[in-house]
Image 1 (cartoon, rainbow, N blue to C red):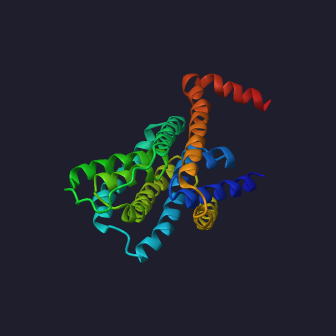
Image 2: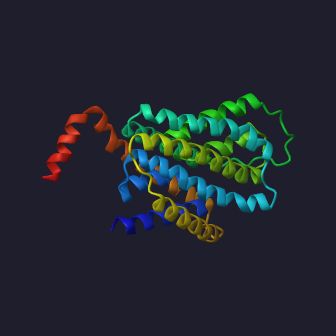
Image 3: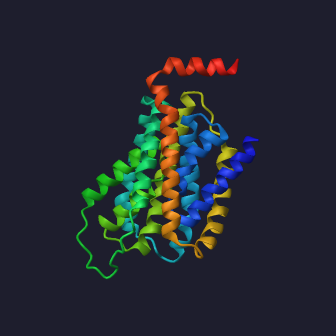
Length: 271
């Protein structure tokens, strides 16, 4: 039965990616943890591979239409890749429970960003000077977060590209997808080594399944998305993220406060 749940979860991720353009990837970790039953550390690592695969595929049409700003990919991507690699390396020092709590905070942050109405960006505005240092720092910090919690962070990257990088929205989406793909694969590469040392094996079949369904779902979602109002979708999804974020916190905070009790309770339930 978990396989059926996994399929449904993967389809949800793909559809929401297609419908919203981004944000769907944030569902990967909870789907893997709560529907598939993966251990938290594994779920975060596998999520990076899945998000990377789906983003890379999503970036292709933009690349073909020349809607990718390669300079931003470098300025934002190189620190981002470094940060994600670092985040994955740092994950050794945090328990999976703490990582999931951080993840819940990121979910709540994402929902706040989605609730805010999208401001129309002036396309014809004069290009303002871009500070590579600011972009680099933002790239690095979003990267570390990506490595620790296993989300692409598109909701943080796109505003940064538009505001800090002075990119028009038409270029920001494809550019962000490519950056997410690069970062996710870097973090995943590090996790493969980190988890091997902890004798945790990555489930490649699950990654492939989720990536393929995610890609197909995002195509379908994009088709459906043309007929639906984006603002309502975004608000609905944001509300869903709040519920999920609170749920993830509620299930993990007790584990941090009373580690012994929760284990005792788990044992008690098994008997």
